[in-house]
Image (cartoon, rainbow, N blue to C red; front, side, top):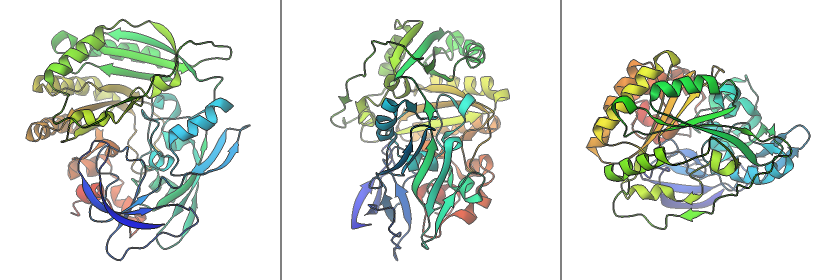
Length: 436
């Protein structure tokens, strides 16, 4: 690890922007560098939205150089690889060999280490749990040179899973894959007219479909509050022939001087998307189904130079319909709706990590252009709804969560502190624990 330089770093939301010294990881066998003038934090592919991967004024350990596959068992579906490899690189290797990721988030451009450190989830949490449920072991390198082999149920495993990169450097991990016959997904589309219809459809669909997710029209109000499109999918069986092809890669070539996401554009897009013709059943390549935005490179630039916030929360099942409805109502009234609004449910499988976000309930993820005080005021009202419903915000998507809300929703945070590497720190952790 060498080549120290100073650079600007941000998350995928492009705010906040930090100044950090960069250290590049090239070899998992090398010890960690111990700076005398700051703290460390791993930085993968920069796909966390807010300040979880940032350490302003300190050092960023760039992990993409840890990019080697170590072992693959094609009979039992076990893959061991270094932590800097992206899910996209994993999929290129395993799909042609009849395997797929057991759990995948909405982008394939996250690293394996980042997926573990944030304990990411996918469209199948109700049947498969989160990413860490399929991790069989990993190595954790501490700043004192100790290398820990972490296995499920080990306290260091539960601390590092969802531990936001603070317990040390994950050098490699082993994951259990799921068998597939081909790259195709059989999917079903259903349009629902309001939030009540969504919950009716979801209760029935989750019994028979492993992947479920919905797009929500945040601009809708009144009787159409919470209307949207429900999508369910499963891996296609042997012998399936599908004419679907991967979409071509588009590029947002530059950052416009202002956000292209405004109220007129939002309302028009949502109306057209909701009413767009779509077949009730279809066959698709896995790419558009799991990663609909990945075909547009640098799509985060459309929000302009001020960047954007993602706001994702989960609320318990018993409070979900009322809480989600109130959130959508307040967003619609504010005129600051999101066109990337994703609604899905978490199952009852227990979390693997002390700070894991997934828990039984319903989760809604939304993107908002940064409009300064107006956006912050909206978030304050949404926070109150989530708080009263007993919910939690997602650290990997966050850039402004209040410390009280974090400490309430993640009560293991105090016990977790004993696992933090003394040379590691982050903007997020200092902010939510009132350390800076």
